Length: 246
Ligand code: 4GO
Image (cartoon, rainbow, N blue to C red; front, side, top):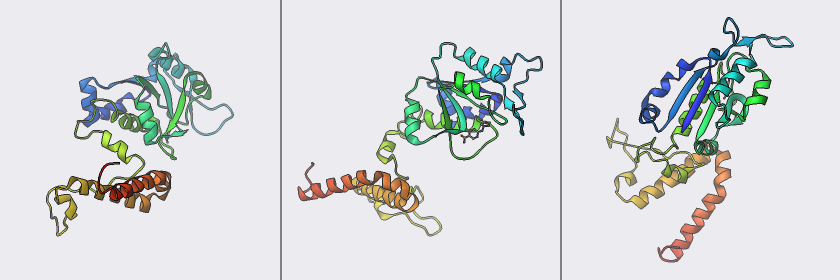
């Protein structure tokens, strides 16, 4: 997957070269190119912002450097162009999966009070938000989005950390996890996890997921209720058939 980023602070993306995402970039599975919007300013002082028409506090990013930058990066409009903004649609796992199917993504990160609206109108396909709060720039939201997307790109996660198991848990919170030692500060581990009975472990984990989701996120639980009820019906039928499949 090719990802390009237009930003006034390309160095803030240095942290993307760490860990799992860093390895994916090294391996060439993920291509991440950051471009400095300032390099496209035609102003003699390389200015990229100006006072807002109509007055008010703060500065607005001017349209010329943004427009020229994005169209230098992506002259044939091959990239899906995303502007990070609290006004955008909120990122969710479903949106992450959808974006991970794109071959080419171009993120634009605004600063100050935002960008001239005409840039969005001319050059942006969609606005995206990582949640209902305001930050000083679109860089962190962009990095959050790229990190989430990268997990779905083939070869980024090891086979052990496969994203496949996750689809079974889509819309549910995670079950509790434990590793060695079996006792720490007097606290043990649920017996079933030490039993070696894989079916029992899977059933316990599912039960915990449902319990935790119902307690902490009733909104999420309501959405997946039909799925849960279908699962329960399947189990009941299996019991009736004396454990045979169907
Ligand atoms: C995106 C951008 C928050 C988000 C931003 C978000 N703040 N919730 N700030 O995804 C225009 C200037 C937007 C700063 C930018």
